[in-house]
Image (cartoon, rainbow, N blue to C red):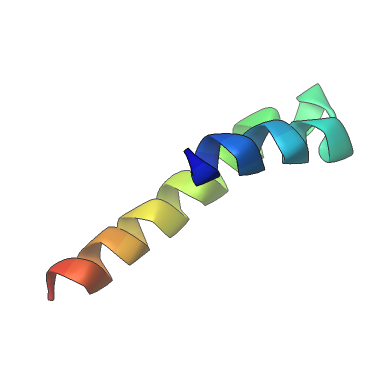
Length: 39
């Protein structure tokens, strides 16, 4: 829920052009957090 809020908030700030880069950044960030929580 928090992630989706961050995504929509950032889309307003950066615009649609950076949506792909932002999605990739959030995905990497999410994977890192996921791996940290598992270990």
